Length: 118
Image 1 (cartoon, one colour):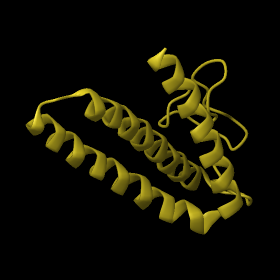
Image 2 (spheres, one colour):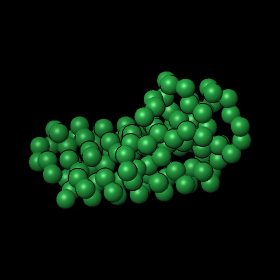
Image 3 (cartoon, helix red, strand yellow):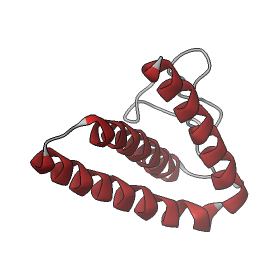
Image 4 (spheres, one colour):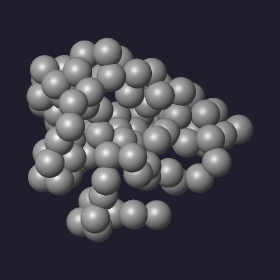
């Protein structure tokens, strides 16, 4: 597995395991290395904030403590803001590739969260 700080080419993918989301730069043109890193960081920001939001939502539904619920609401709002900040940048680069990335992200969440709840 490669990390963002490692050398990454546009043809390499970051795979976690098995049926998982593939994080690749979403750009139709050729990019320099710095642009590729930026795109990957934005995609990772979207994926991380989305998954964090879902786990917080699941905890919110099961917790009874009002103070903890308020903390979780704040955290979910932060996650949502981070997701949409990254999405705004990515939608300007390649809207169709962003749509594909978001479909993959939804699939990954469905698979992961279904296994978590089982």
